[in-house]
Image 1 (cartoon, helix red, strand yellow):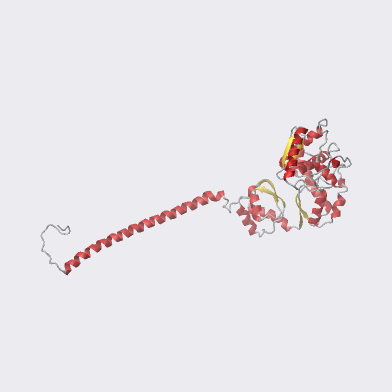
Image 2 (image 1 turned 90 degrees about the horizontal axis):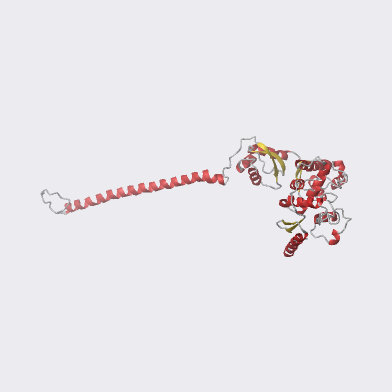
Length: 392
């Protein structure tokens, strides 16, 4: 039985072209409806997939903004309301870009974000006006307020004078003359009468009192005013270290200058303790002598690691701490605040000897006995042999 017919008897339709056409027209109609339904389902499926993809991107974007962005400091507009709190003496390095300054300020919690500072600096057209120096700032300042402080110096007529650490008096004077345009002789003449600048009578020169740092001197300042400002900075650092007596200040500066010449900042306090042991225990094997190559070299007017035995025996060199017990007659350089702090507060230890055995990384070995020290010296000599030209 043909399923498209009922069980009711019907008049037999004559076969012919019309009936054939009618039969074949019914099948494509069903197919077209099924095809349309299938296409609708596929379109709905594609739409759903598209919506899910878009939703996934939205969620990922939200995650990036809320989680990853703060980690990478992309939140460039974050700013403190100000006015700030506490004190931060910020040193703006010579040649530092706006981005470097911004990063430094964020690390010190002066500004909330690099972007806020850079935006404020650009708004003030100040990117090219930043001058090196030390600026009094606060923590959690509004970025625009920080920019105002930093750009104030550019509106004044000043000479910028960067004084590096480990410079001797003659080198400091040369740097000052170059920076200020003042005659070198103005500085050297003043150094001949240290007491006129407030130094103790025993000071042979201004050595030790010319504090390193970033200076901005008004263009109309004299050489005496320049030196007075630097000396006062050194005295302020001594006072902060708890050293107020002028004679004791001179002693601390002398030790600090030796400490800085003999080691790096990580070793300052330990070397300072060893120096105090030598000075106080005159019956020890060192006999109250510091035996510092750096002091001998200063007295000779050279910078070298190689001091001959003849030079070590020369008592006429007032800075020779091999031949002469006790401290040299004065500082051998102008120390940093870190060295001053170490000299004022030496580490309590039992060491009498120290030697830097790696001049590249500053590795220093300490000893309580001469035998231990001699073994350490051999390590230094071996390093020098392996690193030709670095121990001159």
